Image (cartoon, rainbow, N blue to C red; front, side):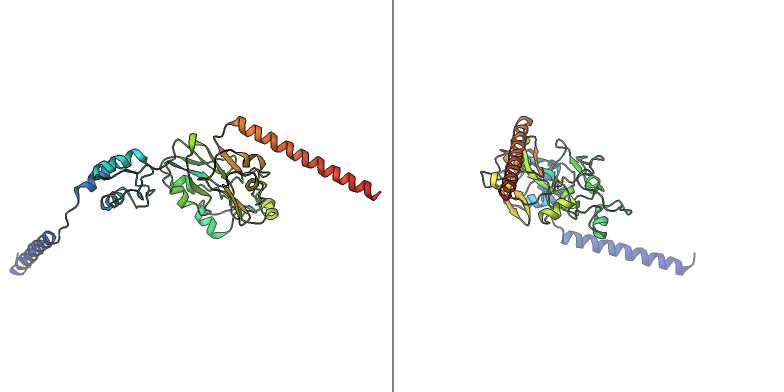
Length: 306
């Protein structure tokens, strides 16, 4: 080995040693000591990294929790109140209990009610399909049924029903992580409070077209007829952009709105069947009464002309 090679090796080795020393000194000089509570809080979290808390992962959420002086605006939907209480104990703060939420699908337009007008032959991605066109039915607001919500769920809590073509949420598995809500390009999935005795009432339609147009594309589309709003005695229903919406904070779960909805686009989850049957019978009686009155009016008009 000649002198040139040896000197090159020595120079490179010396440079490496000097660089290592400099890096070591710099790292010591600018070292930021990490709060040990971050690791403790992260250990208490469920480690799902679902992003339901609004942070990119459990580590980032743990850092946000440690920095916070108040936990009222921070919540882990997967761990729920039990985990947040454990976190509060670690940080010496007060835990703020929050009602559990669940994903609900605000579309009732199954294959039966929303006929296809064309055939989509592209990538099986709701996002891509939504960017290409409005959908394979006359309703531009409805579910595309390609299962992107199912793909992003880490908890096996949502599936596309092959018979209806709509997502179905499995209540026992849903953690309200928000992944399906974010993934849906049509914005038909929302987070709602689980509700007292797991009972919820909501409008399963987001079609803002006028009544006739909406019903033409989907037989169970909300027409904004206001019957539900007029029936509600708690000011929990409002009509905007040809669409009814229910304020879950005001709703008393009386289900009277369900009974007067001709389109049957108001969903009542876990409401006792007996109550719903009673309301449906009432709706049918009123429909028959109106039909009879219309027939009598028609006959009276005909008699008057004669």
